[in-house]
Image 1 (spheres, rainbow over the protein chains, first blue to last red):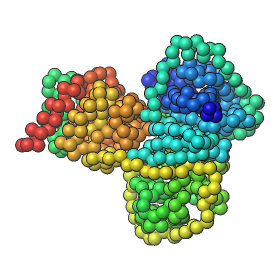
Image 2 (image 1 turned 45 degrees about the horizontal axis):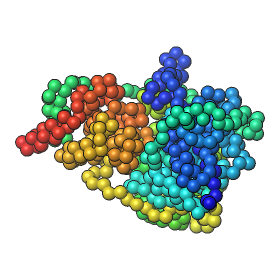
Image 3 (image 1 turned 180 degrees about the horizontal axis):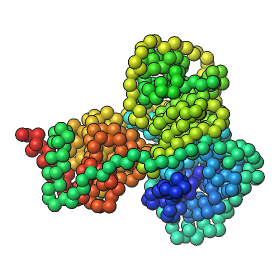
Image 4 (image 1 turned 135 degrees about the horizontal axis):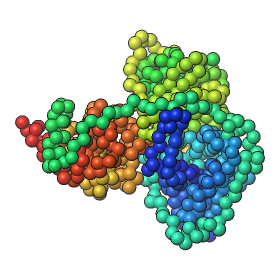
Length: 261
Length: 323
């Protein structure tokens, strides 16, 4: 029998990307309404982890940092089939930057043995994509980034890494951090049975004091501060017409005016 | 101490376009120093000088291209400790992102990603990043020890050679690169074939989204693009669905393009997409949903069925070209 794989997947709860945010003209702060969801990019990371442990053997642990309600995003991953969760939650961690997040996750898993950490390439809301590489650096592990294919065998992980021209085949010894793109798999939809089982799966909640990182994370360790939020110069909408059989002609005329043809 | 550094990605002795964009921006912030790593770095130094680098560190060890990020991070950390720049610019590219993020964790410094502008103001730095698909701009100031690491989005700046030319001073490094640590090693590189102009260079782009309904419908886009001498692009939804390879993707997680004319077909205009194409001079959109956000930014919008209009458009274009 093959040795069991111990996989950690980083997940984040984000405002539903289909509900655009807006600017509160009074407070100049970004306000977002609508539901909170598990980042769709992270669903691919959970799926990649599940496929690995289903092929061989092992377990998938989910880790997230966020407010107490981020538990719902972890439950979604558990409903997909992950085995347990860790939620790092503390008021002091509100508005943490990426480096704080990476430190908190590294702190939360200290002393536990993982073979592989899988993340999405970047969150859909923040999009900086920094946490996975920072986590790899803090742990001293290699990073296999932008994977559109992932295989694990003989103590090594091998990926097809997206490039501008195609892809590179890249290999690293375990333990390693991998970031996966949306193209790597089709994330499964949780079945009712999975949703029921998820309610009884263990989610360990950790406060800041328990990860022993005072002063290194959260508000005390902010590396940057937003000083201004302003609307960008908007593109003006031009003419919108309804196609009554002459739509193509209108576009062709416009292309002619633009000297494209 | 102030000092503006640029992590200059090169390929086979030529700077990548992003390296020249970074130098163009860096010139407005100080006297730029460039760091060029890997085989061909020395050959690229002259071009980096033309775009404003006063000094170029070069290290030609093949490990910089054979092992992802770590060798570059080791070297940068050592040089930064020695020279104390207060700002290091990277491109928001596959390589730049990995190197900058690892370096920020190594040094405990601020990393500001997705930037489109950087200024020095009252002795500090102000970094502008677009949010919500570029509809709003956030200005961020670093609050950590130097250096601040900034990832600049490709095409945020138009690369222009520096006015005064003069060869940069060169510092050739040859200290051994530690490849003993567990690293991510490139085994081979695969190129996917592409025809027509490159998306990044194309004056006209014909781009397709989920509204096309099925992957085979991209054939009519290829046909239209061929008539217009255009490149073909795609939205993330279409790439995630496997209809088109990632190399076609335009948007936040894909390419940023600035063509003269952008024709969006069956693309709703999600923020994820528009951040990559809103710099187009003229936008034409065809979509069946009159509420699609793309119509709020299109110069000409047609509410209608792409499956009907695109084949007609190909005929119209051919007819006009015939005259």
